[in-house]
Length: 597
Image (cartoon, rainbow, N blue to C red; front, side):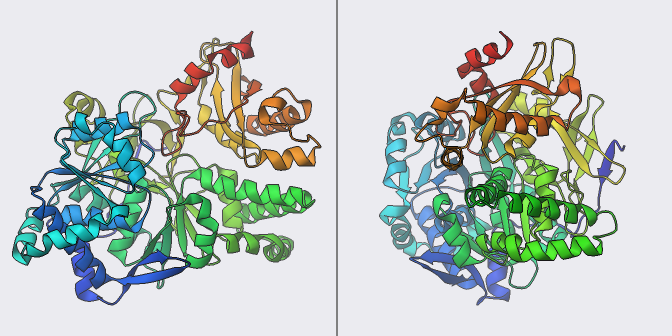
């Protein structure tokens, strides 16, 4: 095992300019290239690089005309849609700083982010968002302007900015350099009040260039395109958005996740990015449909063949019989899954949480290779990534070109490089705790680096469970495996200071009706079934499968099925779908105690 690893930069990062330079250069070198596709009814309408630059400049002039000064902060609260990308670049072109706000944020969260950042204006998607903002508008005294996308605010800004000269606009752009603050992203926070991560233009320029030129098969392949559906408020979506614009990748947006499959079918992206839960859903939904059609055994066999095929790619390649079986299932099963993702997807990028080796092998086995990466808001998204020519499934890849990773004496992963943030806004104490004077960032994650430089995450430093017997247990590996079961929605491993490891499990509300029908449970609800022997037997099988990954002392000995699911709306999950362990422990303390009574 190594204690430190790095790779040279894939490309030299600019030492002048800003993120805005990409759209200016794109319009100058290839003005007619379709940079974005905008949904208009059932069709996608192309927008060229020149048209996008013109739109950005017009909105930026409107921001200036409204008296917003260079360096001032502007909030953006919206679902993932074209207008967000537009105003992101317009805010920067006007020399200002963007403050993303999740569309699902509460009024209290909005008030904190806007008041803490000192935002002077906010873009809102709809009147629904406007009503939430209005609840706390009087508590955000610096924020004196609110522009609503759905009310024609962007057209109005363009009209208001008509009197701003090109020279004044370019003077604003000229105020920016790589050290200029680009955005303050508030960590969604599994505990406590969110902290504002300060990311500079240089942070994102480094991140984007190393990812784009480090993964040329994904971003620089002719005709490459992606449909963005993860929140742009999250650093993951933000970085990919910037990477697509930088590389000339055709970019589309999907605001409604419920309409994702039709959108994928019409857009036909060449690569996707998502959190692991999305890939779990794709797999589990296919498994559920197969079970409902009485073809569960066929799907299970096909899945095992895909995994075996992928694993063989790391050990000399598949033999003749495996090739034949793989080809048969490609026609019967795998091709249909690829079609559901649009038909052209070759690559997928996963981040935000551990993917799990089984799922990684399954998707590579159906010819959709997931490139799992790892990073935090504080690292401008990815710090490590599996690249097409350097993949080790079950790890989060090597440090991306130009980045560094090392393991501290206590096992914590430290990260370094040009992607590391400038610190926490208005919080020097937290900054000093997270950043070493020599630039190393404390990730809070526990892991290891193998001899070839691949990083493996084994747990969160603050989430390690220590049983009454003194055994250290990292819950992530068990939870990842448990969630792989098609009936499991969420789970949390418990057992701190307890005699053994237990787990709380919630049932997937989309999968449950199919299971209930297959098992003749009538109109029963999950709440009716928490003690049902058949349902408990399915979850016990999932627990047994998860326990194969750990020692007997680390294995789950008891579990409880809960009558309700955990959701972002319920407050148990963050907007990036991370579990708020402290919230769950508080709300379901009685259920935990019953495991040990």
